[in-house]
Image (tube, rainbow, N blue to C red):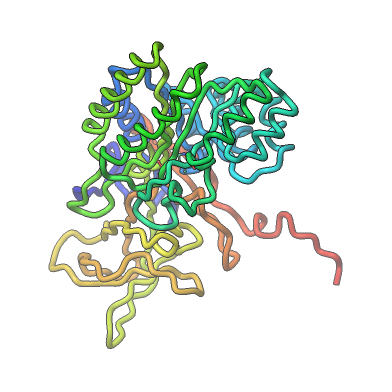
Length: 407
Ligand SMILES: *Cc1c(COP(=O)(O)O)cnc(C)c1O
């Protein structure tokens, strides 16, 4: 991961002067490049990319991805509405909810999107209500333990997601009873998966299940490609995954007797590296143990370090010269709020501009108003031009939905 102080020719310093700090900045070109990389890796099969909206759900990012040729994966009815609002066709949207009410599923059916069913009671409700009239996808739990952190490994045996592949007989019984039209099968093993073999293992499980469903149109392998967070970190070798999974997929389609669509739902892979969180150093505080840099942001804006022990590279944009010092970068939230521990940075002075990298995925979309702090603006750089795509919140937003009962 090389050091950067600009995006498409616009320096972080200029961006900070224009939009203030903290601010989320996204490199639109990088997002489009990632789509191309994925498409190239799977050029020999009928690939459909369903961008996992939850990673970064700004309307303009959704439109950018739509223009780049992706569909979308939505995990809530609100995300479905957002994707429709961004211009995705209902047929381009996959709705993959977990533990939602049947009423919400009915709403999604009415909107015309593909429904991915993740538990047997819901499959039964669906059968009773729609029978064979609405095609569906079924989310299977392949019982593979993979992913960078327990909180993001969702395909293992204790996970709440999907219907266990061990319950395939029960699924088939419900499908037969209600003549359900199953046109897709889905797995999503987790996030930060490195190895082509994990995807291949998932593929084999999916193929096995698929042999029992004669009317399939697609197989959906979920998301979870790992991106490089640390310098020298290895990312998923997409070309390698593409080659191996495509080959296995083609062999399966030949056996199945028909060419199916191969779906992926990447979130992180498409948007993580595009994102930068710009912050200012408020305080440099030396203790007998270490030197803290306190910045004007925290887990209210980027919760990944505290929630997933995620590593985000940090650089001091304001200083290029001199030796490195070791710092622990912390936020301003009243809570242990470490963004980065024991990092080498050029000497940090009060007011210096720092950049936190890989902040595109699960950054803004997981942000909150904790400590009654305002959420930062979002800025998208396209064709060398910066566009404000979300305003910084104001104190009005903190009060907005509060009801003063006149005490
Ligand atoms: C979150 C999620 C994804 C995206 O995962 P990434 O690790 O960001 O690629 C894909 N599919 C489903 C169903 C998800 O819940």
